[in-house]
Length: 173
Length: 84
Image 1 (cartoon, each protein chain N blue to C red):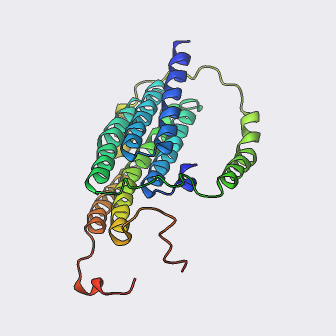
Image 2 (cartoon, chains in turn cyan, purple):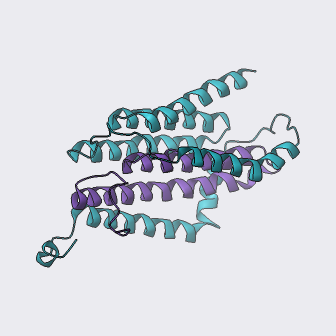
């Protein structure tokens, strides 16, 4: 019962945070709403007994991604820019229609056929097993991931720095 | 929804993040209610997905900044060089 109440509260926080993050015109406020969304999601992970994932969510998303977004928005003078004109572009009704169609086609049947689950079985804390798995079967994935992160970091710095070649200046747009 | 309707590139980036997080939540939820949760497939996949998403945010923001420097705007509807 307690779990159910916390589930609803956390879900409400997450959904409201996501909605505000997407709808706010002020980007800074949007980032903070996004952080609220991440925090709500982290609570949901805790509720599902994935404590390591919850911790990673807080560290990576609230810590790194949030700060990265804030810095990028605040340091780049007018990226937050004038969104005062039309907030949404044309064709949102088509988007809504497509989303509804995808929902009906993909999800309605499986949801109807879902067996009504009782309470999930209790599980042990999974951090230790996660660490073992990360070393034994998934070590190649881990290394590839490290490589990807390094490449992404270097690529991000390079892309954000911009190419400072003299020929680049007078190339036709 | 925001990924397709907003015109600010950064808000589109937010929306992609929200979608990735929703997928992660699905992974964890289905893992928790699966038959043998001790196999830890869900958290493992989520862990890798989070790492890839972090890389994606960094690269995405860098691209937004580069596009802003080039076009002086992040309005996605006015960046249509390929169409013209």
